Image 1 (cartoon, one colour):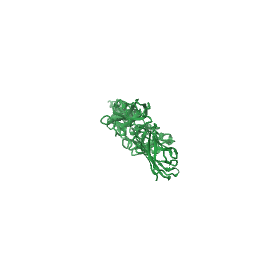
Image 2 (cartoon, rainbow, N blue to C red):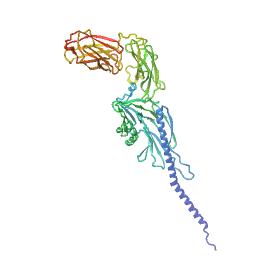
Image 3 (cartoon, rainbow, N blue to C red):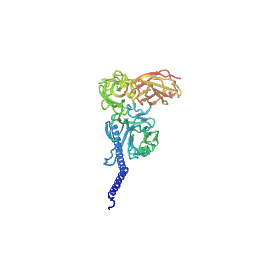
Image 4 (cartoon, one colour):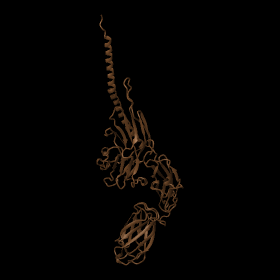
Length: 559
């Protein structure tokens, strides 16, 4: 009788064991190999997205400074490799959004005064700091396996990584400061995207190409504040190459971060004690929605100011209208007018114009055919409702930043009217009082201008009167106070000083305007040799810059 045959059962058992090994192997592959491979994919992607953020930074800086927009791409997520048997989780994604960098969104610039007088109407360095809104860009990954992946942030020209435990790794240097150049690029707008594919970001330049403005500290050091998510030690390291101690201009002791606000100051004077001039730019780049184009903020002179032309000649003046970022504003309506104190003001070939793509307008001033001496014409260019009145003329009471003034000297080339009436200084009053035989008397002279005096122009007062019997000792006298009824006023000194003969020279230190009365006090005036002084006429001759004279007489009195 044959025994039981169990060979088929052994084959079945072997197949089950083999299948078990396959299942176990596949489970191990799914549980260990696939996550490790996917983690590597995610790590590689994170390195790539960091590079994308560096390129995004470059596009922001370029758009702000060049005035031309661009488009850049950021790969927010990635895809795992296809698998025949193993199963992948959902594709990793990421989000990119605008955020406030730190303690707010405001950049400030304080105590910066422009060197150009017209630009200084806006960049005056006084009052409240200039303020600008800025944002940052924050990339946050959403990975399945790479748990220690950092977030990547762009803010204030810097890209850095922030790890899950808060540690920071800076990927770039800062570009806010380089030597005496301040390049405070701001980012405007609102943007958000979250996906596993790449996203294209359009970067605009709403302020156009910003002009560089030369500024100096006004009253206190130039101070800059920016919101930040970085700590004070990190910013100290970023700014350290620009510290004064390292040959730069940033005061290292002024660098602080308080409440998410970075603050630092600049050196005020050079080795000779003169104010240091800095080159300031405020580029603006925009992303996403809510990017509002700036409007005209001020007008400044470009060319034609301080020129001279012959009577009957012409001079072109060019003005530029700028926004708050110092970028040119096109399509702005402007108006212009001209005047000369005490004379035919001449004319303009046109009195209205619209700014071109470069923000500029030009007007041609036509001088009068005849002037009796050198006359200073003022051409005024205004814009907007503040700078122009309802008739299209410059508004007399316009804010300083809404108008620009050009001074053009009209020369008396044919010599007509010289040496006669209508001189440069007309006598308002001249008086001498309490001139006696003591050494503590005073004498006051005053005169009124019939035209503007520019800095350095002189008026002389000749006190030499050979026809007078009054012997007044000016040898021991000195100039006391000098004052003006206007905003100008300069200094006075004796150019000759003898008994009964002296010349006082008044020099304007800043612009004295037509109608200003200049008052000069002479102290410690005596009667010569203790003589008595009788009431009799005493002539005083006032002579303007062009040799025109005005004579007046007054009486000297005794104590």
